Length: 376
Image (cartoon, rainbow, N blue to C red):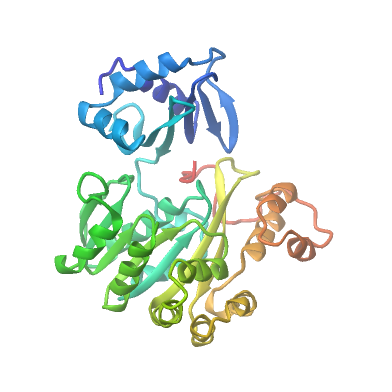
């Protein structure tokens, strides 16, 4: 990557504009997202030839070869003027397109992220499976990084991460952390997981459980005495359990339910909203802590009971997604309108809110505009 690359100049401009994402698509002007709202960088559309030339000068020969072969390329970079970025380059309508996500150079502390306090305790678990889930762009990687950083600062442990691509770069503190990038350090998540138990890890991070082989290997690692942290693209805890089971064929599903009931420790499902009071973004999180009753529901294929168990599990620190969203509305941190767009059950959220209208006066949430906003 040369300092005169045209993509780099766009990255710098987007970063200076406070963007979380940059999109380059033929036929449209360069576009950025600032607090979830799309804006443009200038008004000059990019042509397919422009993008081809920009990508060619930006990538190494090895990366160009991989892109030509796979038609998709994921990688991350670090630069003194833009920090770390996660980049995807792909083809659409026979021309190239680029999607960039800016990553904070500082790994946030869990207490900066406005997450449920109970979630921080998951970093103390000696073994088991913890899943952080949510749609694309919901901050799963940031939450996982904060959990790893908490382990790094408080435990003497061997941590191995498997990421595609590597986003946050860790420095060893109390722990030793190895970071493996899929594509460069291992061909796939499933291959990396197949060998990881021979590398004496205490904690394993799986950037994404994408397929049956990866999910099966993660379950086995959690069963055999490791703490496994992983992400999935699911919206609620009950949906997450069902998604894991449904990946397997019908003959294997009961055995998977037994494995999952024994290994699963918690599921946190999160979505991000624009923070109406302090700027930046703020998460709403559904948190399920696996109790004996929830483990029994998982094992016996009664996932329809999980939602009500979370609702009544406040003493264990649990909360449903809609209850978390309603709390943010009542605190004046998000608007009622945006809350309803991401509710798991909009009608239930309406009942939780009743006649409440958003008020923006300070309520002492512990997040102020003077503090860093790590979700930006």
